[in-house]
Length: 172
Length: 172
DNA sequence: AATAATTGTTATCCGCTATATCTAATATCG
DNA sequence: CGATATTAGATATAGCGGATAACAATTATT
Image (cartoon, rainbow over all chains, first blue to last red; front, top):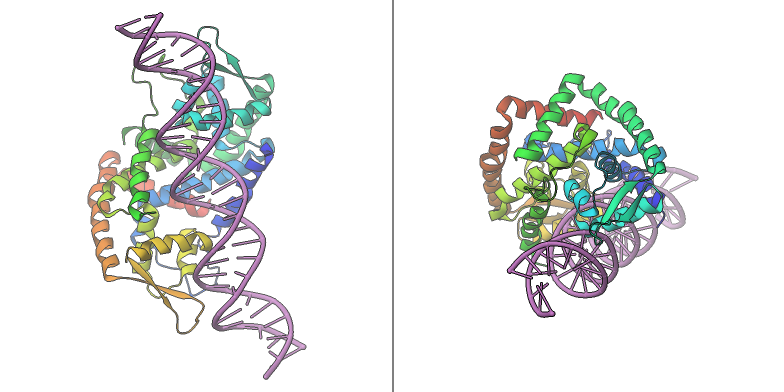
């Protein structure tokens, strides 16, 4: 159950899906997607898989998944919070957040500290190593991952895309 | 292992995630997302979950998941294809496509027919019932699901979003 | 003080994804 | 032609993410 296996496999396994247009002069010509190409959900999922794939590649040296990166980011911006609060804002269910934290804590990226006010809850803190990894991850994400997205889409489109997705994630 | 359970559960379970902004005057105010809101992959995944959720709701009367709908669509637009071809263009691995087809076939929505040319492969065909369900599904998707998306985003934005997502799914 | 609610946790289940392997059937090639 | 390789579908299996129920410890409510 090495931590590295998780992120590394995610990079590797995603390759299987990438040959989807499949048919590099293979079978009998490309199939008709039909109204599938007009289905927003379909393109949304396809794009999301690609983007996550690229994220994993870009941040592979640090062995961080998108979910782990988001946790570190949130811990940094919101010190003094407990597991329930962090998990909730990320849309992670508390039971599933336990193993995630175990993995991060076992790598000495964050730590649980029993709260003095409420001895039920764990205050989550980034370790020094966690802060260092986060800083490196931020640079990789910005300079490799997000930069590539901006390059492909164009800066204006990239911004517009972000805005629309945020609207969908909220007002939908 | 009723088929209905699958799609019905998908609708129900998605509700758990929807209370993510969580904190309707609950704990201690909203947490800071920080650069998370600028991460395209993050918004992409969040939006995708919401859109799939809405898809499931809109098409719930027909008990079709997005993946099942995409299969029916593809079978309709590409008659005479076998399992490998359909699965490949949808990014589904052949082993995993078997159970999917079993479910659709058990509901009499499609059928496998041994090919006469190549007796290894199964030609996939929509049944009459499959065509009828697909027709109803298309209407629900267009008039309820996609219509709501267009309403929220605006027609021009919706089109631009589709275009950008398609570009990401291809050229990325 | 008794009861209810909350936090973290464990166990468990389901669905999607991935790999290896098997068989039947076909293709390739000496 | 016959031996070998390849392909299509299927099975088994493993892993991860997501979901629910239940429990102990603690805190809140009444």
